Image 1 (spheres, rainbow, N blue to C red):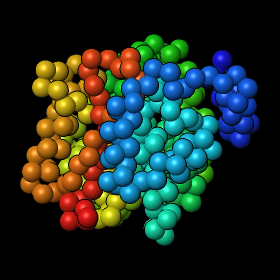
Image 2: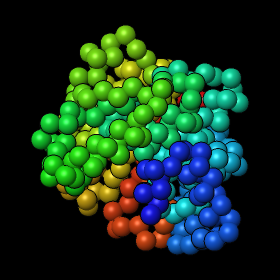
Image 3: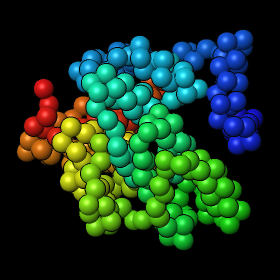
Length: 272
């Protein structure tokens, strides 16, 4: 029902209905929360000079709950970074997203940074890696997926490009980005290529985040995630190129045995 309403209703109506639902029905978003993970994440927010109270307000404004244990904390991160830039009078001109998926997070970014341009890239729709992943293998499923994505990307400040991210340096040869969200292929060699390329595309005072970072040595790889991005990030920090922090992705008690993190990285010379 939630997905159906989101599809047919204007953003402002859908968000208002979510707030009304939360107020009257009072679903317990905090049930099943692992507060140890919340404490770890909020400690990192302090290091990043993010204001958790402002993050709560921003998420609520856009129809999300800070304590929703199923919500990935990249929403919290970009909300906190948005407030940080505002407080310090730092404009956000360009944002890059690698891995559009259905455009849900792109849509959030476009609303959060409505005076900025969000560039989002994903594999061409006829690329077999694209077609054969994330339940898009039949023509009906693919068509349904593309319709949802098209609706989410229908924003004036969103520029969608069908592009293999291995080519981003040449495609964006004359551009820099204030923020980069990497959520593409999580396996080497591609994830390492994406990380290194994005360092070259990132403004010196910008922020770069990478999804689904696995730190465990016991879980090297499955179909969608691996610990290879973590090894690359460690190597880049060891060589004083990046400074990394790691946020627990979801704060639910029922999280799988494979704990996932989101990396928050800045170019090393600008870390205080």
